[in-house]
Image (cartoon, rainbow, N blue to C red; front, side, top):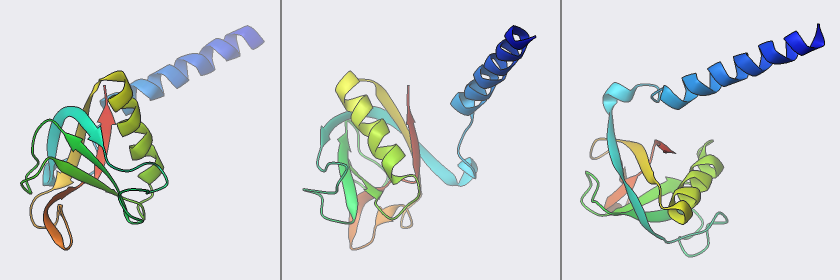
Length: 123
């Protein structure tokens, strides 16, 4: 009996993980997807180098705001997850896909050429 319950829960966990892997972020229709490789890191998980407000990384292509630099806002709930995804993608040389709002909402306030990340993932 226990073996069957374990198998059932394992199957459910794999199904749920597959759904998460293929799901798009909420309101994906209003977001711009960008795929690319992380070429450099300009801040660590504690916000050093990038200041106290953002974790900054560069992609191999420019975003809709005009530059290759992308900012992850430290005040957002997914901040630690996004930093972990970006650092993992950078060290393993895997592509990332990020979503951001169109200009001007997707640009960093005060630095209009910098891109503000809303959501993201790595493959």
